[in-house]
Amino acid sequence: MPYVVTQSCCSDAACVLACPVNAIHPAPGEPGFAEAEMLYVDPVTCVDCGACATACPVDALQPHTKLTDQQLPFVEINAGYYRDHPHADRTPLALVPKHRASRTEGLRVAVVGAGPAGMYAADELLKLPGVEVDVFDRLPTPHGLARYGVAPDHPKTKQVIELFSQIEREPGFRYRLNVEAGTDVSVDELRSSYHAVIYAVGAATDRRLGVPGEDLPGSVSATVLVAWYNGHPDADDNDYPLASERAVVVGNGNVALDVARILTSDPDRLATTDISDRALLALRDSSIREVVLLGRRGPADAAFTLPELIGLSNLDDIDVAVEGEVAVTSAKTQILAELAARTPAPGRRRIVLRFHAAPVRMLGDDQVEGIEVVRTEVVDGRAVPTGETEQIEAGLVLRAIGYRARPVSGLPFDEDRALVPNDGGRVEPGLYVGGWIKRGATGFLGTNKSCSKETVDRLLDDLDAGLLTAPTSVVPPFEYELDHRGWLAIDRAERALGEVAGRPRVKLTDRPALREAAVPAVRRNAGRARVRAGR
Amino acid sequence: MRVLCDVIATPTNQFIKQYDIPKEVIKDLYWDAPESEKLLRDLFADVRVLAHEAGLMNRVSTVLWKRLRIDGRPARYRSEPAPKAA
Image (cartoon, rainbow over all chains, first blue to last red; front, side, top):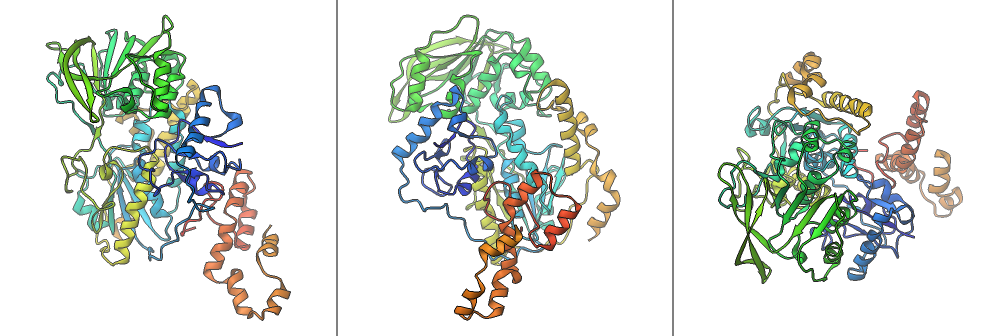
């Protein structure tokens, strides 16, 4: 009678500690956690108490009696994991690490970036007595990719924002939103104003294909399209050619599935989500009937995760087709083979998963008209072109082969791996990194929890060793800065608009609107701010 | 509930007498030392969530919980490991 982990699992792993019988694995630190696509409940051990469900920030844990038909495959996925990985050496209870003896009273830490990695880092720090954490973000709104990256039709994953709002209310937490590290305040200024600085700035750009014609209008990064339909202020004015019948996505990771789904979904279904109004308007006029996803290698090497594939195969407003033969070798290829055998329903838009196809060049002179691809063969796990090429007509080509971090001014940068070189999060004593800028653009939203915990452990090691210097200055308040109350005002305004429209929220997507919704913190706190600065 | 906590957690007078445990040790263990006081507070973290969600926390009950030394941060979820700061 077990609980079952379903599609939205984000590897936050709070459930592992909540479970009274240690039935949820792989836990952070166990072999396989870094590679796992989700966590799994052992149906034999589970006692059906439901503690895990109260811990899950994204509502992924469901009792098996409450599963919908679409969620039923997850019963077998959870059980199957334990056939291959029995975790026979597990302790009767998950081990809770002992509290460290560090003297943290008066510790002041700056976290740059209010995305998942930054929020989890702040949370870890605020579990210690007497710590103050200031969280900076260059945008007026916090939560990074939880707000601007998670697809609008994944509302469960977006629930993680509720967890972040609990972290925001912890004593010692302070937002400094709309303040950009590097321009408004330098690394040196931050370091002299805090005992330690944690950079959790993420990976703001994308990996490029390196093929001719990549910069033609109509050939764009999927990450920018994601920002656009999620109402990111920097992408709000973007315009995409949606007038052709077909779009091509290069890559088949979860971001590729996201953009393909959003481009083919029924706009009326999207209208019930928190998708950007401007994007919704454009999508209503879209002529796209088909989105083709290109994978360099075969179906067995597809980059998307099994839970997302199951979610996609369950949609009833989109046809999903798989081209070519699929050899069944795993749960993923099993579902791909089932999809390949489906007959398309007339009138529905479709997503085509195509394998063994690598991009060669973009077609078209002053606008993308298509893409030339070459057939590949997999040799020793690598895709080798066969020389057999084909042209696919498309008015929009999106590259979705991964996020890539940008160098941070004042920090070293490893161009090859696109991250700040670090040892478990430590760049040098007093300067740390967390999230994608630390480990590269991999893992799920909740992976950042264990990642940030590791960083905070390094920080405490340095504190214990007396390597952190006490702050000598204060970052002065900025006129345009927003604090927690400013964000709450924006949040309230968006939810109120959403309530009228029957949506979770209607996002304010440009800076003037955001500014207007939030009363600037400085004007309200002018007196208090001066006192703080003078301390 | 606070009384029942003592019934469950603290040893009986007979036990204390039989093993001749000094009074200060008992006092330290059952809730006077800072560590044991924190343990007492942590024991009630799950109940605090319940009280908050059921709307039982008003001005009177807040003072009462504080006097009983079981006030503090409500747990985020059932059996959350208590943070050091709570």
